Every structure is written in structure tokens, then in C-alpha cells.
Length: 386
Image 1 (cartoon, one colour):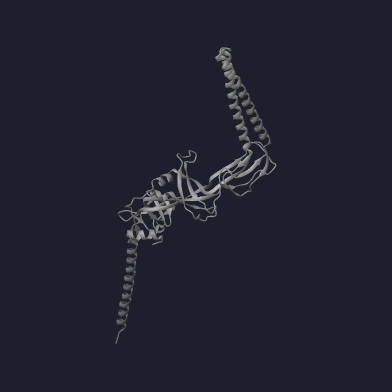
Image 2 (cartoon, rainbow, N blue to C red):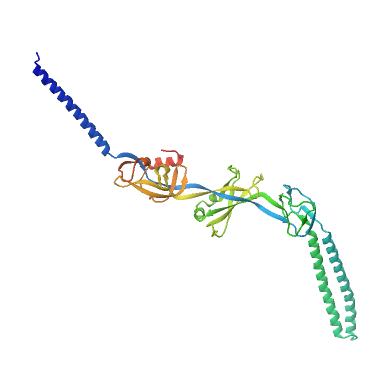
């Protein structure tokens, strides 16, 4: 039989065991929390990827016909007839406009008459010169008189040349009254109709030859140097065009001309690309965007998710040899899908935090796990997050 004293002793021992158990559990939990707090957290880290990457740059371009000319009148008068219509396809030499030419016809007739008169006078003097020369040989007339007749004949020859020049000039002015197409192309807006009085130099219309077009665009000095230093010259000469409605133009163009100097006011240099235009989609004066492809050799790439911004500046966390983090400012050269091309601030041997930049701060200690280079390369080629 258990005495009351023994019962109290057992209860006291059991209570002490429970208290000791609770203390042990609390102590173990505290130790676990302390160990967890003191242990560095594990993070994925990477090294910058160095490789040659293709990039595309867009530049605003002005579309210009391969041939474009303003058709202007070279004489004053009234437009008698318009032989073409706006938007009409014309061939080189085709008659476009006829300007009143009665005045120029009269000038031509007058010049022709003056030429005939000079020729008649010269023939008369030629007969006289022959007679005087015969008499001079017989000493019937003096040598001085012969010289005078010869001089008169030379003067009449010069007058004939002058009148011939006047006749040709009058014929040219008359020809200006018939305005023809300088080359094959399309007629644009006709600014003056039949009966309009025009002055010399008045613009009548313009002609565009759109079988091919030029695209003029400008590059900055740094872009120009990147273009020139590209290894694949043939590849960078090929360009594409984005139309004003943001649709791609189906035909590829080629860069063929680079200007010889930079514009001092803008710091840019002009390029000219030629595009085929068999469907006549592109028109003179249109706008678009030229896409220029380049290659950056030994480009240093890091994922965009490894960066963060502070006051419009870009930073990464570099893992130091003692596994602590250092916040470092970097400069970006280009933005690619999911990646940045680093211009400065990092070395190829630096190790940076791959993800979780929002959860750490400079000076924190981490447990780094370096992702294999092949894994990062696959990430770059697939453009997918890790």
C-alpha cells in the first residue's frame, strides 16, 4: 500500500521530469534557431558569360526615289496642253506639256532670215574678192584695196557664225516649249493646268522612278565604329526595313554609301541603303525604320534578373572571396531579351548573385552555389529563366 508520503514523492519526481523535458525542448529549439540564424543562406551565383552576340539596332529612315526630279519650265508662256495625268507611268522622252511657242517660232524665223542674209552678203563679197584679187595680180588695183576686201569677207564669215549661233539658240528656246520626261518614272501632282501663265523656272510637276529606293538614316559615332569593326562585313551590309505601320518590308536592302564626315551639330553620320521596290510599295518621301545587324565580339552578358536599380543607376551584388556581398555599379551597352551586355563595372572572373537581389544587402554573407557555365549558356540561347 502506497503511503501518502510516497505518493507525494512520486508526483514531485514526475513534475521535475516534465519540467526538465520542457527545458530541454526549449533549449534545443533555441539552439536550432541560433544555428539557423548564424548559418549563411544558400544562393545561386554565376560568372558573366563572354561570347559573340548579334544585335539589332533600329534607325529612323527617310525613303527617297532612286531618281526624283522636279519638272520646271525653261520658258515663259501659257500652258497650251497637258499630255499626261497625275500618277501616270511615262517613259523617257515622252511629251508632258506644251507651252505657247508663237513668240519663239517668230524668233527662230527671224534668226533664220538673218542667217540667210549674212550668207548672201558673204557670197556677194566673195565675187568681189575674186575680181579684186585678179586685178591685184595685174597691178591694176593696189594691195591695200585687196586687203580691205579680204577683211570684209572675214567679217562676213564671222557674222554668218554669229547668225548660226542665234538660230540655234532660237531653236533651243522653241524646243523648251515642249517639255518631255527626262527619264522613265511616274508623274506626281500636276500643279498648273491648261491656260495657266507660267514663268521661267515654274515647277509643273515631278517624276519619281521608284523601281528602287534609297533609305537615308544616321548613326552615332559609337554605333558607326561598332558597325565598321564588325567582322562579317557582308552580313552587316544587309539591312531590313520596318514600314510606317510597323510591318516588315519583304525585300532586303544593302548599305552602299557612308558619308565622309560627321555632322558637327548632331554628331551623327549618314548612311544610304538601297532597297528593291518591284511592287512599288515604297514612295518618295515615305518614312520607316532601318534595322542594322551587328556583332559584338567578346561581349560580357549577365541576366537582367541579377541587377537592381538605385536612383536610375544599375547595380549587381558581387560575391567576394570571403562569401560576403559587395554592391557594385555597372554600365550597360545593350539590352537583349532577358540579358544585359555589360560595358563596364565587371570583370570576366567576377562572381555575381544570380537571383534574390531583393532579399540581401551589401555586407551580407551567403553560401554561394556556382551554376555551371553550360547551364547559363543554355539559359542565354533559350532566353528562358533558370
